[in-house]
Image 1 (cartoon, rainbow, N blue to C red):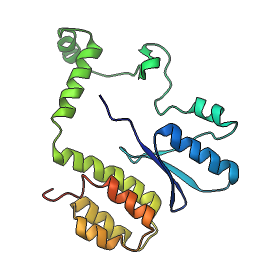
Image 2: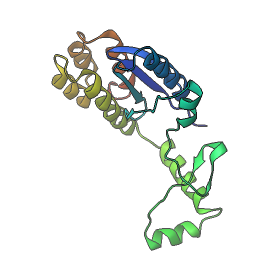
Image 3: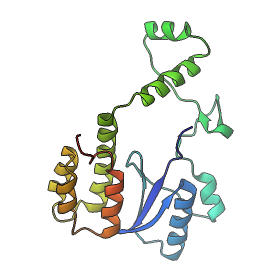
Length: 188
């Protein structure tokens, strides 16, 4: 079973909320209702991707519009969170896929799950560094030692990253260290 996706919202440099998308969007909506001019940024933890939402209307209306997956018409099982997407393969790849037991979708899911199960620590570190770098640029790009800290992140140097980010706002630094956990491990 997949871990549920988690998100974080920052009101300036203060962490506003962290958790499920619905919980974070609800906190952002409350903050927006208090001050529509507040600079609130929302990030997906796994990718570091920044998200934007239409906060007009009631909380129920806002939550009704929230879906991190692209809306697609057609096949899929929306109630299960499954949406149809396109995959481009070469004819020889389609031929192999069609020869596999079960549907093409089932075969692709098995391949993806097998690849995820065999993911190396280096793969996890690279993904964590990329996600952390995206968030770090948005939240700490104007702070002292940013560029050096980014290099330490890319090198997997935890002690240097911690030293260089020591003067940053505590909530920003704590969030970045959490996101970078796999990127800043010994022996990377």
